[in-house]
Each structure stands twice: as structure tokens, then as C-alpha cells.
Image (tube, rainbow, N blue to C red; front, top):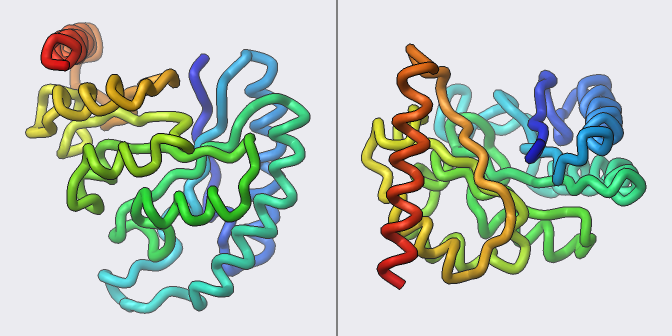
Length: 215
């Protein structure tokens, strides 16, 4: 199993302390469970639907300094469990329409480099990157040192091959930076899995081989 992903409400920067503590406890439990199936890590965004700067009411629930303190405290409580169970925490930037904090790879890199814990790494999600990153290959290259996991989806969050994402250049970048982690498909549920998933996987394989041939 490659990884697990946050499946609880709120998040580790939740302004509601009850919600934040629930997220912390759920993260600890997930790390323990994932170790049983030898997963590499647990994907943790700062949160979902916790306020956006670009959607009403256009104001986050608290300041960036307060968010940083909440995030730091949450990670301080959960990273020892990551080390104990040998399962990394993969911190994921989420686009500006879903949360007000940690939208770009550079913003997450600043957190990861500051905390400087070997069990804390970055997730690069192609869908969120498509919204937030000015240059996707440069974004991947910039965080290569801390890149622990990759989420694959097309530009419209559908299966690879159903949007306009340039997977060849992204795969070429991953090969060039010698990324050794998993590539996990995270997208909308296909209408017909039996038909659509093999098509998507074949498409990804073709893109990977084409990228390798262009190096």
C-alpha cells in the first residue's frame, strides 16, 4: 500500500480546538494502522473547507501566525508517532479555493525545512499544482529534496488523459530529479472503472516511457 489520506473533517490547523484535537488523534491512529500494511506515509493537508481568501467571506478564521502555531503544535504531537511507526507524514498544499493556508509547494517547503524532521515530507498533487504553480516542472524541482509522495490527476481532477495536463514533462522532471516514491492516482471516481482505469494506466505508461526517451 502506497499511502493513506486524511479522511476526517476539519484539519490540523482547525480554529476549533475540539476539531483540531480530533484531527491530531485521527492522524496518530492512521499512522499506527498504516504501519501494519507497510505504507510509506499518511497524506495530511492543513485542512479542508476551513476558509478561503478568494471565496466569501474572503477572510480566514485567524492570522497566518496563529495558523503556523497551530500547525507546528499539531506536527509536534504527531511526528513522534510517525517516527515510532516508521510512516512519514506527507504535508500537502491545497488550492486557494479549498483553504487559505499552505496553497503552494514553496509554502509547504518553508514549513518542512523549518521543522526539519526526516518523517515530514511534501506531497505534490498535480491537480492543485495546476491551479497554484506558475511553472509545474520548476515547482517539482524546487522541492525535490523534500518530495515524498505524488498525487496524479488530470487538470480537471479526472483520470489522466481526460484533461489537458502535460504528464510527459512532469514525468520527465520526476525522472530528472530521481524521484523514488509512489505515484498515486487521486481523482474523481470514473464512470466505468473496468473500462476507464486500464485506459488511464496505459496512457500514464506511455507518457512515462516517452519522458524517459526524451531525456
